[in-house]
Figure 1 (cartoon, rainbow, N blue to C red):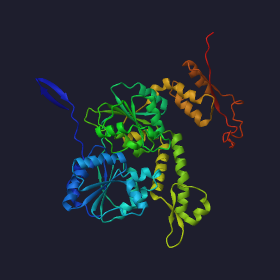
Figure 2: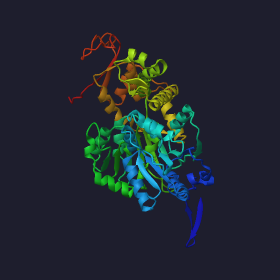
Figure 3: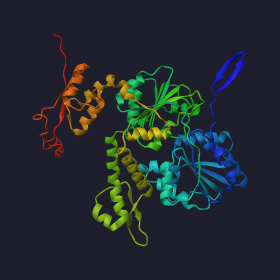
Figure 4: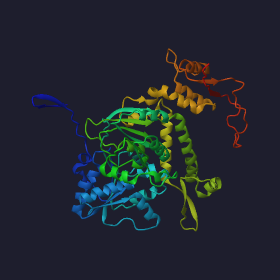
Length: 517
């Protein structure tokens, strides 16, 4: 804390402690880097990763008469960085390309790297793993970068945990630099479970405060944009749902150029997950419904902190055990066949899985013979195994996901939005399940939502106790728990499939209409 005297009055000034930067950590050691060496830089947002490249490494390359190839993963980010390079007159030494451009050239068997490049900078290198799930070519660009042993390769990211694990898995030797993350700007960490709860919360935010809301679905972002009129919608221009056609390109360009948006709300997908800076004190909330942890943390970093008084509330959608179990099953479905291929070879794999499609496996021209062989995409295979192991670890712990994210963001305390808005939103949830058969997992979810406890704090799970809760709180609902009538007697479902819940006991929630007498 600093005090100054102004016109005889002592005034308190909040001074933000100077953060360590990448340049501070590396210092003159950059001069010791050897040709062909691999460098990793793990550092959060706003600590000068790009500054180091544009200044320290730029000066070194210029002295040597060599050039820097700077690789990025987002078109909007590359456009922003290109403008900065041109403004600083450093285009003589730094060339900017997208990873996707490199991968396209590789597919066409074009020459990619010129000998003039001595330094290859892979910015946001978590890209290779996180995007391998929907871009099969990340393995190609990664392997090509590593294969050029004459060039010095710098890999940078704020979220490098899984990527560093992959380096270790592959036995890749590297020189490592790490700038500690600083999350002192987080005013409060909140989790939410119900989308309707979040919407009610957003409606209550004061006029002079702004919100960035990241969603995993472009359709969800578009729906929120329609619901909240004073908002800007951002997603990739090409989407399966077609909602990308609805974006306002002019407003988005204005936002990128000015590093702020005029509207109260910004609803966006992870297309803005890294590199884009938004500097505005009015941004008080950053919300994320993003499942991949690395991508989520990248999204949170889009709000750049101005000084020690600039605080932000982080709101994250909780990942339930049911969702993590589902994710584990999805991982297992792709991992098992790929593992079988790795262990037994193409011939045995084809015998067993010849009619199966697996996103981890592709055809590659066979060596020395005519035809193709089955090959596993190693990067995506590792990512699937990494995620499966993460979900498994979190499932074995109480509030596993919440505590994991608290640790990632350096937070001791948290709150759950649903707890504070629960009474106002419980009817929305109940309306969604009226008339549905509620089996064991659904009953557990209902019990969890109601969160009815006795005097000793024990969670109440009995159907009659829940009905008493509805009655006392004037909620027009009632659970039917009759053993005779509440067994699912359907042997087949409407689509003709065998009913997996045949003869299982269930609850059915009814809603009654009150009439004036």
